[in-house]
Length: 289
Image (cartoon, rainbow, N blue to C red):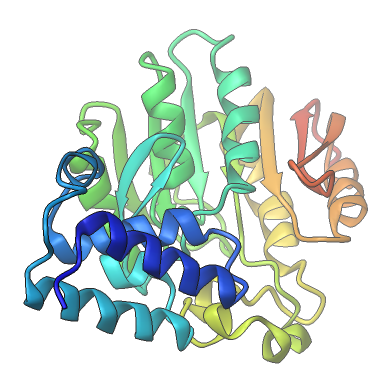
Protein backbone atom coordinates (compact mmCIF):
# COMPACT_ATOMS: atom_id res chain seq x y z
CA UNK A 1 0.00 0.00 0.00
CA UNK A 2 1.31 3.44 -0.94
CA UNK A 3 2.30 5.71 1.93
CA UNK A 4 3.03 9.43 2.10
CA UNK A 5 6.32 10.84 3.34
CA UNK A 6 4.58 12.24 6.39
CA UNK A 7 2.97 8.93 7.30
CA UNK A 8 6.24 7.06 6.73
CA UNK A 9 8.02 9.47 9.06
CA UNK A 10 5.26 9.19 11.71
CA UNK A 11 5.28 5.40 11.45
CA UNK A 12 9.05 5.20 11.99
CA UNK A 13 8.94 7.72 14.81
CA UNK A 14 6.38 5.57 16.63
CA UNK A 15 8.48 2.44 16.12
CA UNK A 16 11.47 4.23 17.63
CA UNK A 17 9.43 5.54 20.55
CA UNK A 18 8.08 2.05 21.23
CA UNK A 19 11.69 0.84 21.26
CA UNK A 20 12.67 3.42 23.87
CA UNK A 21 14.76 5.61 21.58
CA UNK A 22 14.91 9.07 23.16
CA UNK A 23 15.70 10.96 19.96
CA UNK A 24 12.91 9.24 18.02
CA UNK A 25 11.72 12.41 16.26
CA UNK A 26 15.17 13.48 15.11
CA UNK A 27 16.33 10.03 14.06
CA UNK A 28 13.14 9.17 12.16
CA UNK A 29 13.37 12.40 10.20
CA UNK A 30 17.07 11.95 9.42
CA UNK A 31 16.60 8.41 8.11
CA UNK A 32 13.67 9.37 5.86
CA UNK A 33 15.57 12.38 4.53
CA UNK A 34 18.65 10.29 3.80
CA UNK A 35 16.75 7.46 2.08
CA UNK A 36 14.76 9.94 -0.02
CA UNK A 37 17.72 12.20 -0.82
CA UNK A 38 15.82 15.19 0.56
CA UNK A 39 16.67 18.04 2.86
CA UNK A 40 14.52 18.64 5.93
CA UNK A 41 12.83 21.50 4.13
CA UNK A 42 12.10 19.32 1.10
CA UNK A 43 10.68 16.59 3.31
CA UNK A 44 8.25 19.08 4.85
CA UNK A 45 7.36 20.42 1.41
CA UNK A 46 6.69 16.92 0.05
CA UNK A 47 5.00 15.56 3.18
CA UNK A 48 1.74 14.69 1.36
CA UNK A 49 3.41 13.07 -1.65
CA UNK A 50 3.57 9.31 -1.97
CA UNK A 51 6.89 7.61 -1.32
CA UNK A 52 8.40 5.58 -4.19
CA UNK A 53 8.56 1.89 -3.35
CA UNK A 54 12.37 1.73 -3.50
CA UNK A 55 12.69 4.70 -1.15
CA UNK A 56 10.35 3.09 1.35
CA UNK A 57 12.29 -0.18 1.16
CA UNK A 58 15.57 1.62 1.71
CA UNK A 59 14.11 3.48 4.68
CA UNK A 60 12.78 0.29 6.27
CA UNK A 61 16.18 -1.36 5.83
CA UNK A 62 17.90 1.56 7.58
CA UNK A 63 15.34 1.39 10.39
CA UNK A 64 16.05 -2.31 10.90
CA UNK A 65 19.79 -1.68 11.06
CA UNK A 66 19.29 1.11 13.58
CA UNK A 67 17.05 -1.04 15.76
CA UNK A 68 19.81 -3.66 15.69
CA UNK A 69 22.15 -1.08 17.20
CA UNK A 70 23.84 0.78 14.34
CA UNK A 71 23.86 4.54 15.09
CA UNK A 72 21.97 6.84 12.73
CA UNK A 73 25.03 9.06 12.20
CA UNK A 74 26.99 6.14 10.74
CA UNK A 75 24.03 5.03 8.65
CA UNK A 76 23.66 8.43 6.97
CA UNK A 77 27.33 9.48 7.15
CA UNK A 78 26.77 12.85 8.76
CA UNK A 79 25.65 14.62 11.93
CA UNK A 80 25.18 18.16 13.20
CA UNK A 81 27.23 19.84 15.92
CA UNK A 82 26.90 23.45 17.08
CA UNK A 83 24.83 24.17 13.97
CA UNK A 84 27.51 22.78 11.62
CA UNK A 85 26.88 19.85 9.24
CA UNK A 86 29.67 17.31 9.65
CA UNK A 87 30.75 14.24 7.72
CA UNK A 88 30.94 11.21 10.01
CA UNK A 89 32.48 7.77 9.58
CA UNK A 90 33.29 4.90 11.90
CA UNK A 91 36.79 6.39 12.25
CA UNK A 92 35.39 9.08 14.56
CA UNK A 93 33.09 9.39 17.53
CA UNK A 94 29.63 10.75 16.86
CA UNK A 95 29.50 14.35 18.18
CA UNK A 96 27.31 14.62 21.25
CA UNK A 97 25.32 17.47 22.74
CA UNK A 98 27.39 17.25 25.95
CA UNK A 99 30.49 18.21 23.97
CA UNK A 100 28.83 21.47 22.91
CA UNK A 101 29.44 22.58 26.51
CA UNK A 102 33.19 22.25 25.88
CA UNK A 103 32.89 24.19 22.62
CA UNK A 104 30.82 26.94 24.24
CA UNK A 105 33.30 27.45 27.08
CA UNK A 106 36.21 27.70 24.64
CA UNK A 107 34.30 30.07 22.34
CA UNK A 108 33.49 32.43 25.20
CA UNK A 109 37.17 32.57 26.14
CA UNK A 110 38.62 32.81 22.63
CA UNK A 111 36.29 35.70 21.79
CA UNK A 112 38.15 37.82 24.35
CA UNK A 113 41.49 37.38 22.57
CA UNK A 114 43.12 39.12 19.61
CA UNK A 115 43.75 36.72 16.69
CA UNK A 116 44.07 33.66 18.93
CA UNK A 117 45.61 30.31 18.01
CA UNK A 118 43.59 27.31 19.18
CA UNK A 119 44.48 23.62 19.26
CA UNK A 120 41.73 20.99 19.25
CA UNK A 121 43.66 17.96 20.51
CA UNK A 122 42.19 14.48 19.97
CA UNK A 123 40.04 16.24 17.40
CA UNK A 124 38.13 13.25 15.98
CA UNK A 125 35.68 14.72 13.46
CA UNK A 126 37.04 18.20 14.24
CA UNK A 127 33.69 19.21 15.72
CA UNK A 128 34.98 21.33 18.62
CA UNK A 129 37.68 23.16 16.69
CA UNK A 130 35.36 23.80 13.76
CA UNK A 131 32.67 25.15 16.08
CA UNK A 132 35.20 27.58 17.56
CA UNK A 133 36.42 28.70 14.14
CA UNK A 134 32.86 29.19 12.90
CA UNK A 135 32.03 31.47 15.83
CA UNK A 136 35.33 33.39 16.13
CA UNK A 137 36.39 34.51 12.68
CA UNK A 138 39.69 36.01 13.87
CA UNK A 139 41.06 32.75 15.28
CA UNK A 140 43.22 30.09 13.67
CA UNK A 141 42.63 26.48 14.68
CA UNK A 142 44.77 23.35 14.43
CA UNK A 143 42.91 20.03 14.54
CA UNK A 144 45.35 17.62 16.19
CA UNK A 145 44.58 13.96 15.62
CA UNK A 146 46.66 10.76 15.35
CA UNK A 147 44.35 8.53 13.30
CA UNK A 148 44.55 8.89 9.54
CA UNK A 149 40.90 7.96 9.04
CA UNK A 150 39.85 10.67 11.49
CA UNK A 151 42.17 13.19 9.82
CA UNK A 152 40.48 12.44 6.51
CA UNK A 153 37.12 13.29 8.09
CA UNK A 154 38.62 16.47 9.57
CA UNK A 155 39.77 17.59 6.12
CA UNK A 156 36.35 16.90 4.65
CA UNK A 157 34.63 18.88 7.38
CA UNK A 158 36.98 21.84 7.03
CA UNK A 159 36.10 22.03 3.34
CA UNK A 160 32.41 21.34 3.87
CA UNK A 161 32.07 24.28 6.24
CA UNK A 162 34.20 26.70 4.24
CA UNK A 163 36.84 27.09 6.95
CA UNK A 164 40.02 26.31 4.99
CA UNK A 165 41.54 29.74 5.70
CA UNK A 166 41.13 29.29 9.46
CA UNK A 167 41.54 25.60 10.18
CA UNK A 168 44.38 23.15 9.53
CA UNK A 169 44.31 19.41 10.36
CA UNK A 170 47.65 18.09 11.67
CA UNK A 171 48.73 14.58 12.65
CA UNK A 172 49.92 14.49 16.26
CA UNK A 173 49.98 12.00 19.12
CA UNK A 174 48.45 13.44 22.29
CA UNK A 175 50.42 10.95 24.39
CA UNK A 176 53.74 12.34 23.13
CA UNK A 177 55.37 15.76 23.35
CA UNK A 178 54.17 18.21 20.65
CA UNK A 179 56.36 18.81 17.61
CA UNK A 180 58.38 22.01 17.97
CA UNK A 181 57.08 23.36 14.66
CA UNK A 182 53.50 23.26 15.95
CA UNK A 183 54.11 26.51 17.81
CA UNK A 184 52.34 27.98 20.82
CA UNK A 185 48.61 28.29 21.43
CA UNK A 186 46.35 30.62 23.37
CA UNK A 187 43.83 27.84 24.04
CA UNK A 188 43.96 24.06 23.93
CA UNK A 189 40.68 22.13 23.94
CA UNK A 190 40.67 18.39 24.36
CA UNK A 191 37.97 15.74 24.44
CA UNK A 192 40.25 12.73 24.92
CA UNK A 193 39.52 9.03 25.23
CA UNK A 194 38.38 8.65 28.84
CA UNK A 195 36.58 5.33 29.27
CA UNK A 196 38.43 3.08 31.77
CA UNK A 197 39.55 -0.12 30.08
CA UNK A 198 37.46 -2.24 32.45
CA UNK A 199 34.29 -0.34 31.54
CA UNK A 200 34.51 -0.93 27.80
CA UNK A 201 32.62 -4.22 27.83
CA UNK A 202 29.71 -2.60 29.68
CA UNK A 203 29.15 0.24 27.22
CA UNK A 204 25.91 0.46 25.29
CA UNK A 205 26.25 -1.81 22.22
CA UNK A 206 25.65 1.17 19.90
CA UNK A 207 28.89 2.63 21.28
CA UNK A 208 30.91 -0.50 22.07
CA UNK A 209 30.23 -2.27 18.76
CA UNK A 210 30.38 0.68 16.36
CA UNK A 211 32.38 3.64 17.66
CA UNK A 212 36.20 3.55 17.44
CA UNK A 213 37.84 2.11 20.55
CA UNK A 214 40.91 4.24 19.84
CA UNK A 215 38.76 7.29 20.67
CA UNK A 216 37.17 5.71 23.75
CA UNK A 217 39.79 3.76 25.68
CA UNK A 218 41.50 5.93 28.29
CA UNK A 219 43.66 3.41 30.13
CA UNK A 220 43.16 1.52 33.37
CA UNK A 221 41.53 4.43 35.20
CA UNK A 222 40.49 6.46 32.15
CA UNK A 223 43.00 9.23 32.90
CA UNK A 224 45.95 8.35 30.66
CA UNK A 225 45.33 11.17 28.20
CA UNK A 226 44.70 13.77 30.88
CA UNK A 227 48.05 12.92 32.48
CA UNK A 228 49.85 13.06 29.14
CA UNK A 229 48.30 16.35 28.01
CA UNK A 230 48.91 18.04 31.37
CA UNK A 231 52.51 16.79 31.48
CA UNK A 232 53.60 17.04 27.86
CA UNK A 233 51.44 19.71 26.21
CA UNK A 234 51.59 22.54 28.73
CA UNK A 235 54.70 23.80 26.89
CA UNK A 236 52.54 24.29 23.78
CA UNK A 237 50.32 26.72 25.72
CA UNK A 238 51.36 30.30 26.34
CA UNK A 239 51.52 31.52 29.93
CA UNK A 240 48.06 32.86 30.68
CA UNK A 241 46.52 30.55 28.11
CA UNK A 242 43.65 28.19 28.83
CA UNK A 243 43.40 24.41 28.76
CA UNK A 244 39.85 23.03 28.47
CA UNK A 245 39.01 19.36 28.94
CA UNK A 246 35.82 17.36 28.55
CA UNK A 247 35.68 14.73 31.29
CA UNK A 248 33.74 11.57 31.97
CA UNK A 249 31.38 11.00 34.87
CA UNK A 250 33.26 11.10 38.18
CA UNK A 251 36.54 12.34 36.64
CA UNK A 252 36.30 16.10 37.22
CA UNK A 253 38.06 16.18 40.60
CA UNK A 254 40.91 13.96 39.39
CA UNK A 255 41.46 16.12 36.32
CA UNK A 256 41.32 19.28 38.42
CA UNK A 257 44.08 17.92 40.68
CA UNK A 258 46.20 16.93 37.69
CA UNK A 259 45.93 20.42 36.21
CA UNK A 260 46.72 22.09 39.52
CA UNK A 261 49.82 19.92 39.96
CA UNK A 262 51.43 21.25 36.76
CA UNK A 263 50.79 24.95 37.25
CA UNK A 264 47.21 25.65 36.22
CA UNK A 265 45.12 28.03 38.30
CA UNK A 266 41.63 29.56 38.24
CA UNK A 267 40.35 26.06 37.58
CA UNK A 268 36.62 25.70 37.08
CA UNK A 269 34.26 22.76 36.61
CA UNK A 270 31.23 23.27 34.35
CA UNK A 271 28.20 20.92 34.29
CA UNK A 272 26.38 19.73 31.21
CA UNK A 273 22.63 20.09 30.67
CA UNK A 274 22.06 17.13 33.02
CA UNK A 275 24.08 18.84 35.79
CA UNK A 276 26.90 16.30 35.41
CA UNK A 277 30.40 17.85 35.72
CA UNK A 278 31.51 17.81 32.09
CA UNK A 279 34.16 20.46 31.45
CA UNK A 280 37.25 21.34 33.47
CA UNK A 281 39.32 24.34 32.43
CA UNK A 282 42.15 26.34 33.90
CA UNK A 283 44.74 29.01 33.15
CA UNK A 284 48.44 28.26 32.84
CA UNK A 285 49.95 30.49 35.48
CA UNK A 286 53.62 29.61 35.82
CA UNK A 287 56.11 26.81 35.58
CA UNK A 288 56.34 24.41 38.48
CA UNK A 289 59.56 22.84 37.27
